[in-house]
Amino acid sequence: MNRIRNNKGFSYVEMIVVIGIMAVMTGFLAMTIGTVNRNNVRRAKESIEAKFNEARISAMSKGTEKGYLIIARYKGNIYTYVGEGIDSTTGVLYTAEAISKKGTKLCSSQLEITIDGTVMNGDVGDLVYIKFKQSTGGVVQYTGADPTTAKPQFIVSVANQKNTMVSSFRVYKSTGKIKTE
Image 1 (spheres, rainbow, N blue to C red):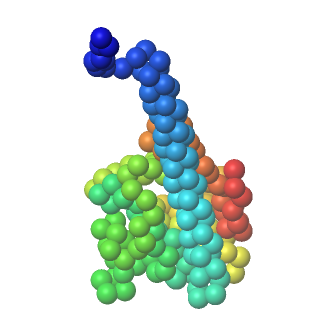
Image 2 (tube, rainbow, N blue to C red):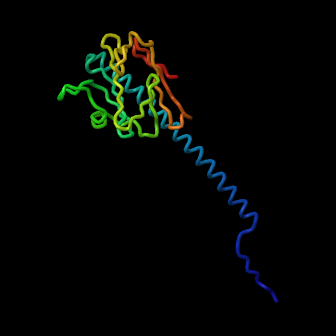
Image 3 (cartoon, rainbow, N blue to C red):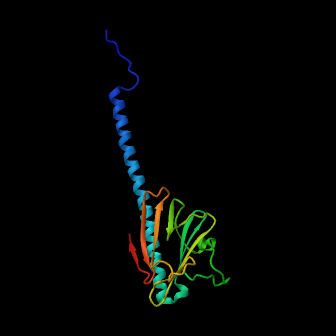
């Protein structure tokens, strides 16, 4: 008489195989998340570089009053705007809220932007004004600082929240040109 054994459960080998597969998949997931974060940092830095160049060219072709780059943090998001530094309808400087409506959304609160050592981290409204000169494309003014008395260059950095991935570029004030770090 043949008995049929009723085996319920998994063998030790099957468990090891499943655990191995899960470990490999977890490793791929961790690498993918790291790659996504690195790409977000790189993309945000490249977008700011492009806006710097756009504002510089705008100043050289249309005049200094149209050669502003405004970077604003509003409600956790970063926005950029290239154009006039003063709202033509009200005659006052733009607010972070106005830039959030008028500008281009660059990134969310997952990234941190640092300009010349100052971190843009205000949720209510944090603004950086950068003005370019028509004749040379150089930086005339940024965030209220006088570039003639300050250092001849400043650094713009984009980092993830833990500062494990940082991408930056240097802006030379006299020419407005950029060098990637």
